[in-house]
Amino acid sequence: MSVRTYNPSVRVGNWNEDIQLEEDLLKDFLEKREKGQLQIQRSSNLTSMTSQIALSVSRDGYLHFGDAVLLRCPGAVCRERTSAEELPRDDCVLAINMPASQLYEGTKVEGPCGVSGAKQTQPSARSVFVITSIDGSPSGHPLRFGQPFHLKMLSGDGTLLHSDKASFQKCAKRSRHQEVTLVSQPSFLTQWQILYFDPRLRMEFEGTPVPANERVVINHVKTNQNLAVEEKQCVRTPFGREYEISAHTFKDSHKAEMDVNHWIIATGAPGDEINPPTEAQ
Image 1 (tube, rainbow, N blue to C red):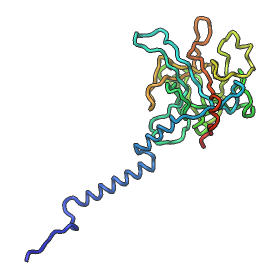
Image 2: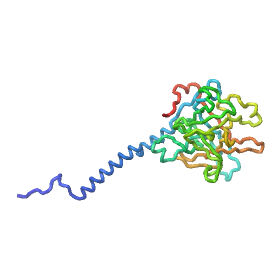
Image 3: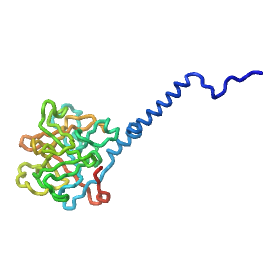
Image 4: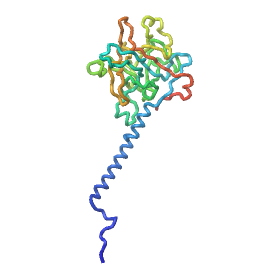
């Protein structure tokens, strides 16, 4: 009688290596899931940063402390084109430019962090700022021309728009102008003020409420440089190519700021306040 020497329970071949490989794959999967590094989690983090957010609604047509706003620079024709194929500058909004590693891991927005001019102009988690008081003005009080204030990211952990004088070690990477970033701690370097866009009438409007959805100039208090879109300089971001942002005053032959220094601080339309935005904790 023949004896059967093999059955399914017998381990043959490189059985130990196969078991170890399966355990390693499972361990790697669990570690990536815990750190938020799975592809589906990265896609979810990317989507959450572009999800639309409702802006504050101005009933009287002016900006107020505590308003959630969008900083938009209207598009224009590029001057001094280097080639016939160079396109006009698109509308863009001031937006956070997180490193891809932080964005995919879903970490909170923490300074220092870069900003850029995003061509996706809808209000989102990466482009909505809150006007914050410095002198103790209560929430809902009108912001006035020449009054210092902070611009705080709505989705960030208290990150504020910041700038400082350009140096050889610290400046905008492409234009070499004054760098604009987001930082976690308030200081004199995070103070900004609104100037009337027409310098001929700037003195007359000093101290008056700032209208919403109209062209203004955003000026850095310490360095007296204006927030600007570098229309000829683009940077790569996880969201595509976007304009570089700097603090630099561009003036024309009439000593007036050029359109790259003009910003519209946009608020929502009536009806958008049904689900008002709340700051991320």
